[in-house]
Each structure stands twice: as structure tokens, then as C-alpha cells.
Length: 286
Picture (cartoon, rainbow, N blue to C red):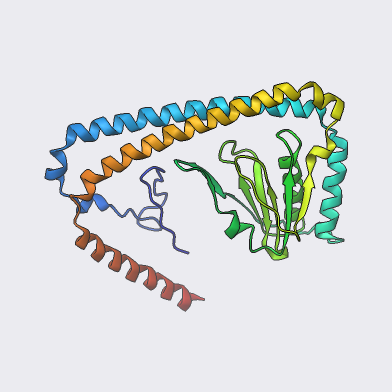
């Protein structure tokens, strides 16, 4: 297996340099003398980008705090006994009589969505879409959607199935989607800011059904306020991320104008040849 990682924003240090990992340094192809002429502008832009991202992160952190308060109100009104019964029923429906396996299934944790300058962007159509059976989990924050997904994921792993668990970018501890490729089964949460429109053949599970109406009504105004505040804070964070991207685009111009792209093209071709060579080595071994 060969993978390539862009470390521009996500720093990844090689664990086994030379033996397994290799750094491809595109800085070898820039005109340093020309770039240094713009040193002050580059430093200023980098500082501004840092400030804008810091502001965005503060607003996202504030949005999460409001979201947590929103959740807490619903947790108080939630009948988790009924939610647990629904989870057990769903597990029986998906796995039937298949027993727990002697071999634990592999699990992979990923992200299907990201908070970007364009808002929340996801690729659910390419991840959830191909699955033949889809369960769309709806419900307000705090109604146990992630708990339900975790229970199904654990049941799949215990039965030996390879399972993909996709997490929330705002709160990475929470599961957002679960895919069981061998069964062509997908379970996905549908709630702002990442919604999934169900098709007629999809199964929709509404966790709001397990809220106590009397208790929920006490917090109706609080929940409405939290929803409004959360949306405002989240949108504000997106604006700062967008402004950071504008500054980053301006920063890239100084480098783009001073790169040896012919040299990079040659490096690309030689790197591809080496990757294909590794593939041949694997074929010979297998």
C-alpha cells in the first residue's frame, strides 16, 4: 500500500524514514531569492491567517458549549430505556441470528465531513449512497443518536465485520455515520449542520419519539434560544475561516509565481515510476 500526505496544514512526521516513509520536499523547486523579496508581506499574511483561525476556533468552541447545553436539556427529557430497546431491535434486524464471532472485526475511524470556508461539507453521497440498506437516524441533540450508532458498530465488530465509523468534526468523540461494507449497510445521523435526505426505501428512525413531551416542553424556549445562538456562532466561525482562506490564497501567489513547475513535473513522473515499481515488487512477492 502506498499513500501520499499533504503536510501543509496537517503535520505528519515520518516514523520510519528511508525504510518506509519518505519526505518529498517541494521547497527544492522554489526561487528562494525571489520569495525573500516579499518577506514582510509573507510574514504579515501568516500572522493574520493565524489570528483568523484562532478567532474561528474560539467561536467553534463557544458553539460546542451551546450545543452541549442544548443536549443537556434533551437528555433530561429522554427515555433511554426505550432508546435502548430500539437499539436492540435494530441490532437484531441488521445481524439476525449471527452470533458473536471468535474473531473481532477490524474498525476504522474516519471523517466524512469537514468545517470549511464554504460551511459544512460532506461526502455522504459517496460513502452512504452506495449502500443497499440505509438507516437515517434523526432527532435533536441529546436524544442518543451517537449512542445508537456506537451500539450497532460494536455489535458489528463483535460479529467479525469490518466496520467504518465516521466522526463529527465539531465533536470528534461522537459517531456520525457507521458503514458495514460486507452487509452493504449504512447508518447515518441527519441533523444540522449535516443532514441527509432519505430516499423512499430508506428506514428513518426518529429518536425524538423517546422524549417525554411534558419535560421537553419545559425547555422549549431554552432549546429554541440555544439553536439560534449555535447557528449564529457556527456561521461566525465559518466567516473567519473564509477570511483566513482569502489571506492564504494571497500568500500562495508569492510562491506560485516563483516555482519551477517543470522540475516538479519531472519529480512527479519519477515518483510515479517508483510507486509502480513498488507495485511490481508486491506482485512478485505475492
